[in-house]
Structures are given as C-alpha cells and as structure tokens.
Image (cartoon, rainbow, N blue to C red):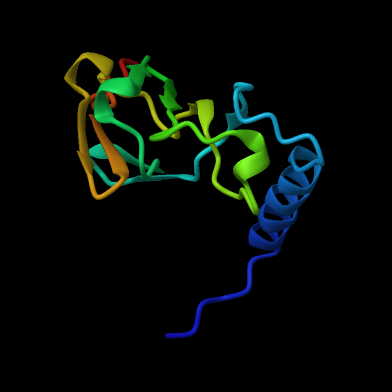
Length: 144
C-alpha cells in the first residue's frame, strides 16, 4: 500500500532525532529522572474522538489520564526494571522517567464519559463527542 508523502512526518522524525541527539551525552546518569514524549495519534468519527498513545513498558497504574471538554492530558512514569550501575552500560537507548502529553481535542467532548484501555503497550482513550445543537428552521409568515 502506498502512503502519500507528508512533510510534517519528516519534520516530526527530525524533531525526535534532534531530541535524542541532545539527550545523549557522555555522562549517562541513570539515576537522573528524564523526560520524554510518547507518540500519540488522535482521530475523530461522527460520534467520538479517539486517542492512542504508545507507552510500552509502562505499568497502567503509573498512568494518569485527564480529559476536559477540549483537552487531553496523559502523564505517567516509565520506571527502570532493574538498577544497573552507570559503568556497567555499554549502550543505553531506552528512555525512562516521567512523560506528559497535553493536546487539544478536535471537537468538544463529554469528558465524564471517556473510557481508557491499555493493551500491548498502547493506551487507547475513547471520548464521546458533544452532539451539536441543531437549530430548527422557522419561516415566519410575512404580513403585509
């Protein structure tokens, strides 16, 4: 399947590469809390807004999701499974530490009806949309 080229995807990849580049350094302090941003997708249907967040290795109990009528916040913590002294590392590319994403939603939603599920390292949040108020058209009789 061919996927149309999107320059925004290239810019996002460049941003991630630059972020990784500047996060790397000769003084890898594994005890230091780092910050990172998981990948997030949002789409909408006629009835709901759906967000998926890739957070493999994160315990669902370490994730906090907050939904308002027009914003989504996902924050949490990816903890080290095992503490290894810095001098024992040959290469360290995995990210650990706290993360947070706060993004605007594409439509007004019913935040109190949001549902979240976590499977295979992917958090999915489904939020019903507020039904727009449809004004009934009224044609007054023109008196003369």
